[in-house]
Image (cartoon, rainbow, N blue to C red; front, side):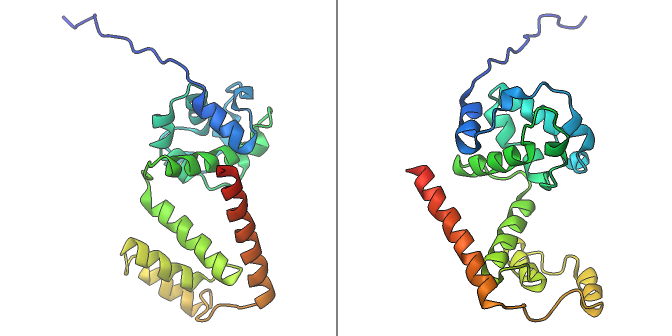
Length: 194
C-alpha cells in the first residue's frame, strides 16, 4: 500500500520579485491572465525548461529561486513574439531581460553559461566596433568558452563564402555613437542603483 500521507506543499505568494520588476521597467506582471498565447508563439519554447507563461506565473507567485535558476529567460531570443501576442500588453521579452539582470545582480549563475558568454562577447564586440564583427566575436567567444575547435568546419565554410570578414568595418562616427549609447546606459544604471 502506498503512503497516502504525503505532504502537499503550499506556495505562499511573495510580491518581492514583482515589485523589483515593476521598479526596474514599470511593467505590471499581474495583468497577465495566463492565456498562454506567449508560449504558443514562442519559437524557443522547445529549449526552455518552463514556458514563458509558466515563468510569468512563477514571478507572480514570487518564486525567485525558480525563476533565477530557470533556463527559460536565458533561452529567450528576444524576438518579441510573446510581447506582440500578449492581449494585456505585458512586455514579456523585457521581463526576461530584467530577470537575467536581476539574477546576475543577486549572484545566480546562468544554467546555460554558453548563452551568457555569447551575450557578453556579442555586446563587447558591438561596443568596440559599432556593429557586429563576426570573426572578432567568434574569437572572443572561443576565449570565454575554451571550445576552440567547435564549429570550426562551419566557420571555414562561412569564411570561403565571404560571410566572415578578416578585418572589422570601422567607422569612427558609428563607433563614437555606440560608445555614447553604452556610456548613457552605464550612467543610467549607476543612477538607478543610487
